[in-house]
Length: 90
Image 1 (tube, rainbow, N blue to C red):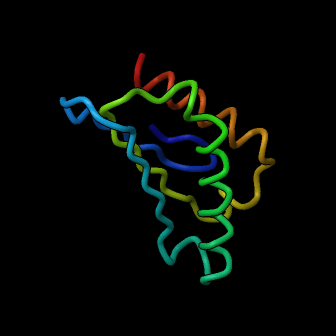
Image 2: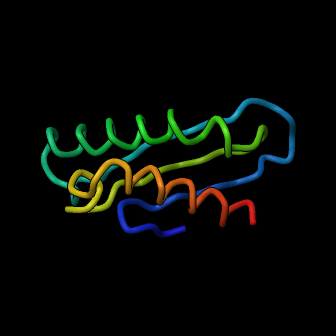
Image 3: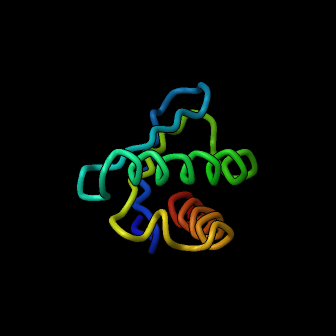
């Protein structure tokens, strides 16, 4: 699912278990400082949003986008993640 600030990949493992989450930002996002900032924002958005929306037995990967993940307002980032999770489980 492509959102304005990130890309979400979701996969049902087909077996019960905990939710697993990964975060990645390529060098296209920027230098190490920019990549780390983008990943910190994605981690915090996931920490706040996933507990009520993630499903056990699923894997999620959040991929940062160039000039967007670190720039958009944080509440917008969280709202986009909630919408992307709803679409993934739709």
